[in-house]
Image (tube, rainbow, N blue to C red; front, side, top):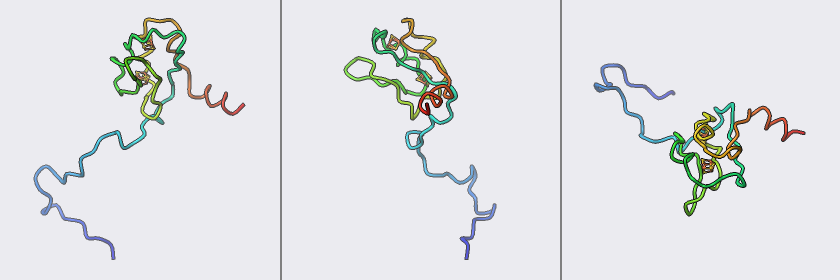
Length: 103
Ligand code: SF4
Ligand code: SF4
């Protein structure tokens, strides 16, 4: 027998509150259609990308950029727009990366 759900009279004002959580539990990077590609040789480790990334997807250790967490990067391109170094961050299509991996 299926679990009986509460009727509207049992629901408190404001509705039922589901368990609080955050996006750290969900890998949201698969929404992406573009991805940033980082060139460590061109990077000056100014960390502008870290400051501006809205998803905290720029990985930093000991004051230096270490890469991009693609599990959470949405491909918005803000990091590449803010980066002052030519070629340090380049946006590419996911399709081009998939095609390279498959070749
Ligand atoms: S903004 Fe550009 S140069 Fe600065 S840390 Fe990020 S990738 Fe490197
Ligand atoms: S593309 Fe957007 S989400 Fe991804 S690392 Fe850059 S700023 Fe962050």
